[in-house]
Image 1 (cartoon, one colour):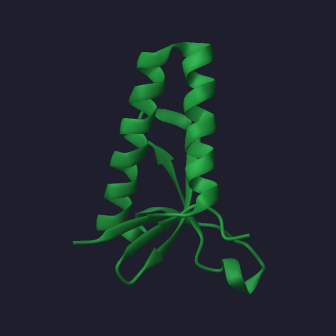
Image 2 (tube, helix red, strand yellow):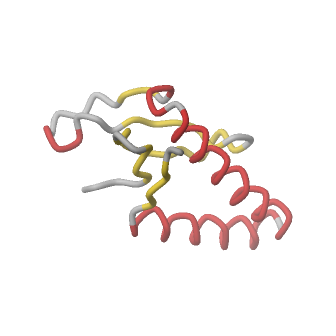
Length: 92
């Protein structure tokens, strides 16, 4: 089964987005965001190449891709495909 690895920065971003959405849009929206983010991560682990590659010049970032969180079009997931799934979050 493919795995989802969340880098520390990604974990921090999820918490910050949750708090922001809870304050601005309500707890239901914030909880739906977390649920949809996790579902998006799992979808990416199943099909790591479905996100759009980013044209970044730094060689360490050559494999970074982006994908939208389901139902939250303004929230992007930056990730790298890995042999065993995906790694969520920036490595910079």
